[in-house]
Length: 157
Image (cartoon, rainbow, N blue to C red; front, side):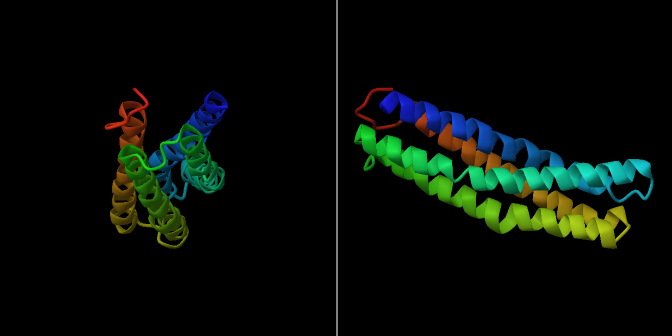
């Protein structure tokens, strides 16, 4: 059962978190590109909108990752291990960043692209969103390292 839970947990993480990471990282470029009123700007706006929908959809699917992780940890008897607690804390922080900063930031940038036709007005918001997305991605990279290295784990790495 451990192998099944762990496999489903890792697959969910790759598919959900990986998709969010890629789509969120690409979003600011296309949102800024949407400011052009030409055909290319309209194409960029459509891509930015799609990337935002991907982030929203996979954010919901991503809820399975910590649920499966907790189930796997419980099955393995490691819920009280420091590496798992740290991973869960970082996961909560990453989820909060996604829900409270990235998704709303994407919505604001999309709205700004529709209402403010100047690149200079939107650039600071896009830069902030890029930075926040980078933090989100680094948090997940740290979680992956903790899941592999498992410092202090007695289950063997």
